[in-house]
Amino acid sequence: MANNNIAVTLQLSRPIQTHQGATRELHFREMTAGVMMKLKRLPFSIKTDVKGMREIETDFELAAKYIAELTGIEEELLEQLAPKDFAAACQVLGELVADAGN
Image (cartoon, rainbow, N blue to C red):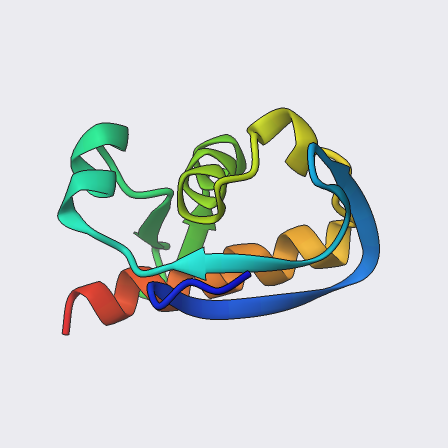
């Protein structure tokens, strides 16, 4: 995939079937304000418990929408991802969101 807008490529532990055949990696493009505006909110929120400990909560359904938007692979096809691949994709998404704020 020759695309100069690719920000991150994630190797999958097992391929998924897409319209282009077996896909062994996800190519994420850079985050844009347009993506954030389209999806209206971020898939991550920071919660603080009574002891002051912070934890990040992920809205996985919304994260899948972001991953679909940034990779060009339909949400329904992303459902084939191995759990560890989906977790890794969510981590990449978090890094792209953080980079967008810098």
